[in-house]
Image (cartoon, rainbow, N blue to C red; front, top):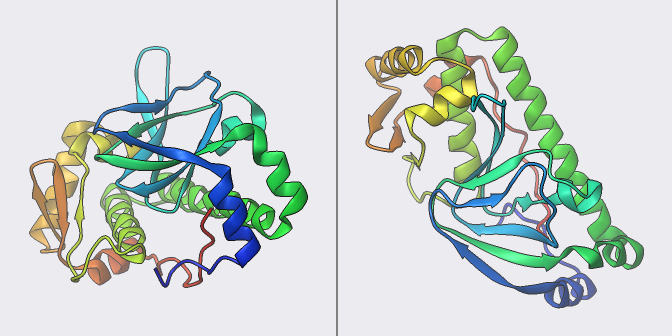
Length: 230
């Protein structure tokens, strides 16, 4: 895919040996749980997932969404214990790596080590944008930003061949991402639909006008640059 940088030959040989297999998961599968330890690190090859944390009473905050090319479980690989959970939002295929070879990657392949650092920094940048949205945008601006953000990420990894992208999210996912009640979320999404920006479907959202969503959210979109792939 043109959005990913090419491997150097020696990097490709290492990543091929670093990979131990592939894992298939169905929608709703918990891939990693907060507080757990995992012997593996993953790259998402196809499908959607999301990262989240919960309070003791079960209230959930979705932190970010994961699409093809994203690393899954890096936090547990570095810290040793997951500080969030990861759930499959759609059927997934994941590339499986042995966590205990991560030191070898950093020691012998500094380019790949930089790539992992870049991916972690990219995640931090996205979380900065999400926090700005939660703290300063109105409810309708927050919803517009979230849907435009997911649209742009999906389009960048080839999840649509047209200008229309279907996002596999429910209104509960939107509510748990934006910190709104389900009633408030429903009213907010209806406002976007009334403006002909989206069409809400059963368990999905059809994006009709991403430029209109971005204008409403006062968001310029992500910078265009090639991404690394591990």
